[in-house]
Image (tube, rainbow, N blue to C red; front, side, top):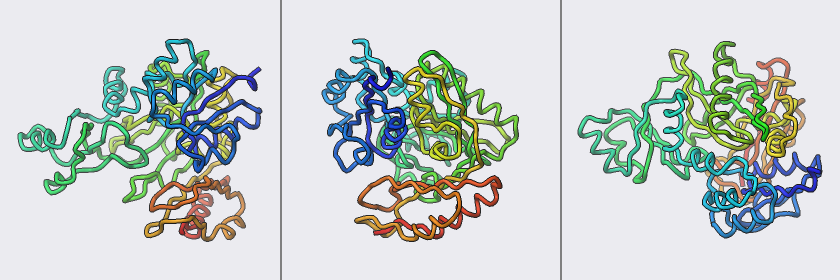
Length: 380
């Protein structure tokens, strides 16, 4: 019985919380590990274990108690996961996938080896090497610098446009990418089960906060030509198969000014670009991930309604105990679904929740989302 299967989740943030909420509908036996009980997932389960998922012993000991281990964040101890896998534990996504994707350099090399189109790149060790390459003419401005590890939510990524910008280079191993001229950014979710069955979700288009480099709004479905949608689906399916992955994979694409698709990055877990699926799709990304790792029949990924999702970010200039200004007014708007993550403290640009707006008319959904954005403020 699936309800007796012990499933451990490494990470207790908002993604962990929503995984637990999805699993509770089927009375799944879900256990969550994160550093302290202030994390969002601790609010929705009594099976929360305080522990550091970057530490070998913590991950190994949790894994020994579980039937299946999964993640809601890539920055976990993969050495412990590899040991558990050797001992016969089911780890989804597999440690190889986590190890590859959490290092942006390995991720880019994987794309190159498997003929997955992405922007041209080079790997560097530190800021000095970058400056030397610019001086020698081996690297032209502008370019994008991405820290190979520990970058998330817009951190660890910057555009270097001028010689003056070289003063703020990250002094750490990095991926250097060409600055590609793009028209749109989209994301596609796919799930692959233990048995190898695959489903792909309709693509979404994304817009980003101009300074925080975070997804500010997404629109589902993406307003792109059918041919591009099909190519994005094919590439996503190829990538999840090439990775031999089990679970949910989110793939972010650039659409260039010449209508070429390039994979930007991928995440082997539920993802910010799939929050809208809770209300807008037949099967949410969270339920789909659990179906995949339990080798259950995969659910229908199709849209029930067009949707707009906006992230609720902490306002600039506010830090402290959170207060949601304008919440009551937003709750009077039809088909507006507010998700608050339960984080006690707000900080500038911290993800504090999201709102999904549904409407059969996408223009009306966008207008309602604009109203929510202007009304609902995360302050202290």
